Image (cartoon, rainbow, N blue to C red; front, side, top):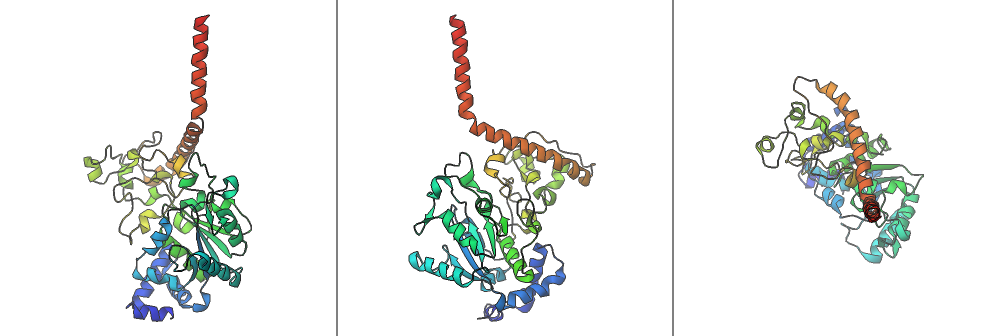
Length: 371
């Protein structure tokens, strides 16, 4: 059944479909004039790319996120435009049948399929801490990446190691970009990744036959080109020095800035404020919870503790210009986060050494006292 037939069966009008294409172009930071090209690409059955979706050290949060995507409803039908040949969460087959389907798809579409990876990859002890079908996640990744057209890492775990890579990282968890070379990689971090960004990335690939421009962390600029702080609906309160001091206080009820409550929005690059979650209904800061920086590398260590603000960054009065604030703030905040991250990791990793040193010092003092 073609996409047009699917849309007709589901009661989706041509106008609704074009509105969806316009929304996708906005997510990709493209002019609305690209909507017809997007529609044409989605309707072209010859362009259906094979997608192999593999999951390793993960909670399946990213799979669950895209399965629940529904803004607009046509988002649920985008899978009719690709050939999802392997995904453990949604496929009916299991065991040997599932592996056979994956291997056949990889062989048939060698050099053409998109490889989507969800979850971190353990590397300690030859990767034995995550095995599928009798082989390690590390070997599965290398084999699948070898003949892929491109690799897409969804979620912070696949992108940067995420929660599994947090200190002390006993399994040696890493993001996929650190484990092979020779293939283009795009990271779509977040915990979970926003399903709208996954859809937009696939649409970009269908329309242009290539992956979008990325930043230094291999994140697409259309989704990670601006700080959350830049587009946050509470930004005005930050500029005015109006902060929440305690959960549930009057300032919290009035929607003031959550920086003092640990919000990491000033140093997190993501489009959460503009596309939001739950069909565009809300996102953490809008719901009253600070950003934890889940789109950034090493966020489990560098952004913790999540409910404490970082070393003091002063607010500004309403008479200050937001542009001047932004220019001065980005350098200051980056430096503070960088130093805080180093201190935090040193604190974690050097805890035992400090305790030993303290005991040694006490012992020496006691010895001097004895003399």
